[in-house]
Image (cartoon, rainbow, N blue to C red; front, side):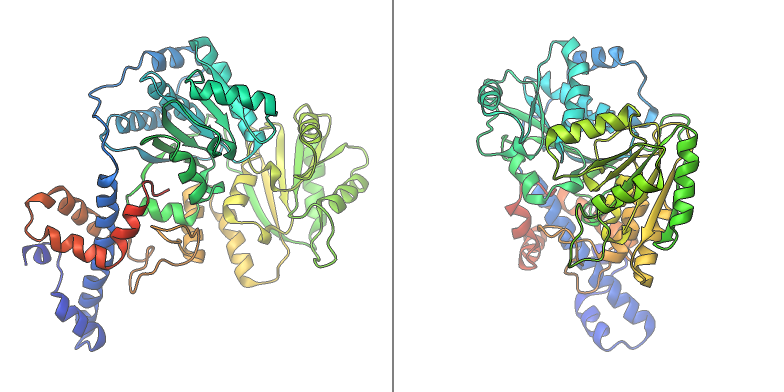
Length: 505
């Protein structure tokens, strides 16, 4: 009774009666409030109980930070306030009795990687290994080059493992990983393959985590006893945002960009408006800048009316005869992709026609235009990432989303990108449109199975239920009703699902 009074909740029997046969609007709202609270409360409690069920590690009173201090002293730049705040939060997580499950969100160029490397150094100094997993070989290679330049002066060994690693190199590498001679392993999903065994994996860092499925993430986590998990993303997908709302993931925001960065001017145009697009590209090329053009298909398809990258490549060569046009897509060999990227990075080609293969891992500060044709065929997270390929210097940059679908829903969806630069704002809007997915399962989209609750509409009540669940779990051993609460969570199916997974994300 005291609990219900504290949270302004009517009795359950009264709520069940009033939700079906309300005597007044206020009674209907009171019933709805009680039943939604129950849905959120038991789910929150299940998440928290599951977190407590993860095997405990010995609490470290403090972390030695000599490696981290030397690392920061060697950097040619100082961490921003947001970076330092996030790193401090991560270091605090590493001293807890349960594994870290933190999401670091920051737009492209905000400096997430340097924070992740700081976390790796803290774990390495404890005698453990760290793994950094990226969704593409290009991004993995870029990370490996960067972290090697940072860690080699500290006497630490890094390695790169991808699908392109030769059999001979892989055999030697697998042995060194098992013997603990590799301090930080960087790679693609190859890091989680069955043959890769770690001496003592203490931290898993997943970059662009929205590009991996839940099962892929869990596969690498099983490589250690109870490794910490640090996820990084510029745009959390709705499911990830829902997890953050449910407080099972801790969230850090790196909300400072390097000085001089300007917002990217984003427009939504129709396919008939090619002239202003060409005029924009021509103006930027004349000033010495470069442009991307992205399409969803590599080749023309008889079953589709979509323009392909190969067709666009020819069109842009004819439209811009005085400039060099390059092409990049996933069906090219690794060597051909590297050659195409190098030509664009060095300015030998001024226009790069590509597929979404350039979504991550491509950093060309001189590129100021991003054109995405048939933008309705891409997810909002993808579009936000593609937009992030430009605006990487102090020069004004532009993103044009070409809408090939004549539907109101498509136009509304693309306008989200025109209205918001912030990744979380994009994800919130995506959540409203697509739903959040299973909070305790594997589905990445779709509405959770709540009878009445709505994640966006009822956020205030979600926060109250979360605080109440935390209090109940913390005081559980002193509450006479604790066994009943756990039984109710189990009856609703939340607890069983929760305890089947050691990590939510």
